Length: 314
Image 1: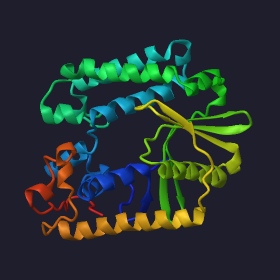
Image 2: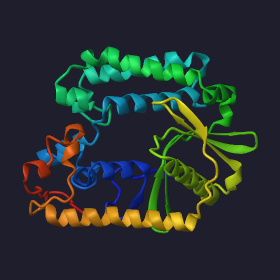
Image 3: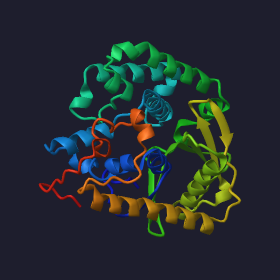
Image 4: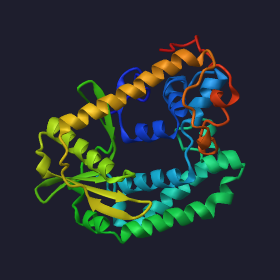
């Protein structure tokens, strides 16, 4: 099940990326999910279109991480023959391809082709100025991964034991839309194995991420929680660990996630109502220098949101 690229922002949603986005800045969360949502992608209205483009801008660290994860998926995909060569070679090919798209300015035609990098956008540097920095980061990340236990284990898994579908898991439970991003899924040792590369900020967050994976497997794949093994690999720190079964009561966790999702939804509704009057709630202005929307944010300029009546705004 895939998440629609412009999900209904009035619905209840829960994911690690949304949590981080809201905590970074509620106004940025609003700009990302309401006026900047993908439905404005092909519309000529300047402000909304620029918001849409800006939501696909990422930091250099995130750009490297995303490229690394896509390379891991590609290298171990049963539909390809990348494993005949070295992982480092697969990673280097992906890097050269994506850096060439950056140099060619492909993001001007469609920001989804390749993400622009915040540092290049705001510091007016050329991609060539960052070539060595990005190559060093991606190469170091690859070397650490090849030396890890998880890479050694993955290399011994037969190609046909990997699941072909590497899309995010988008699912609904109790009125909440959940979204998780397993990097690889395979069967081995009588268990369903999941490689997770999310960056968790604390242990409870990691434990709940594992809990949601197991709930999904139990509900939609009819696999008992004890038969699901989850390996978390942090490609930035090269830390790896297995996520044990959570001891938390899922009903209690679900209530907390529901309350959180309702808070996010209610904030969007309130901000949608007040933005047209130039009222912006809870802007984290101490984070502006790191924000993808800093050149477009009406909370900084003190202006009202521009209504766009030429397409369905709902």
